[in-house]
Length: 292
Figure (cartoon, rainbow, N blue to C red):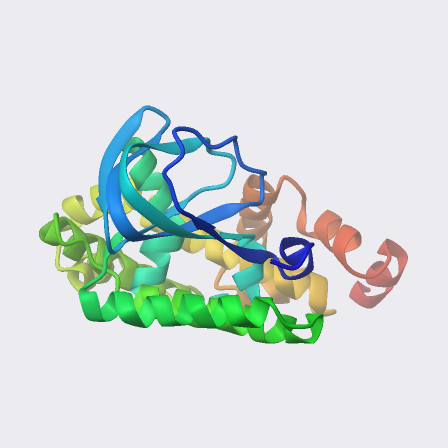
């Protein structure tokens, strides 16, 4: 592996031919996408122990110490990556329910022991994944000019795994989570419009009460909190990238009241819209002139 690959492109691959009992705590921005190529054992993290075997794929969040016990001929392919590496593709990736569950909420659920979010690859799927891993290895041995190809190859792997997502040992639970993932994708595409709780529950195939409970369990937020957060994030982009008045930003982001937008923006960002704009875009003086 060329020196500095992780620093250059935000992702690198390691082959691990034995399950270490303990790995040091990770860097704050280093996530692990792990494929069990051969063998099996027990994956241990934060006191939670789960059996893993050939074909299992899972993601470990940053800043978590983890390891493996009772390794039996285990061989791993471990991609260390920064979440920011996927940012250029995330608008499209978030439309795939499996991506939302495996790479965003799956690791959080796994650490609580509430779900065993992972992919269990079929033999054919494993062949396809190992081909992508091998192609990444080949590219990583070439000149730095291949960096863009490495990023694209990793993104291709993420897309493949997201599309193939399922949990064979808890199919019903996985179906529920997949429905929530589809609903999250719908919210992200329609948050600027009026979104009714009843319609979201119906889309998920659940009663309103059950939908509220499962959605909060998966995301840590109520559906309305999630919608407001998406509106605030969109408003933040408009504040930083345009000269629209704050009231115009509020309405464009899905809010019907600019004062309510300002309160919610401060709630999530801890800054007023005007303060955020001054920090992220043009100088305060220029912005104030534009808003006069």
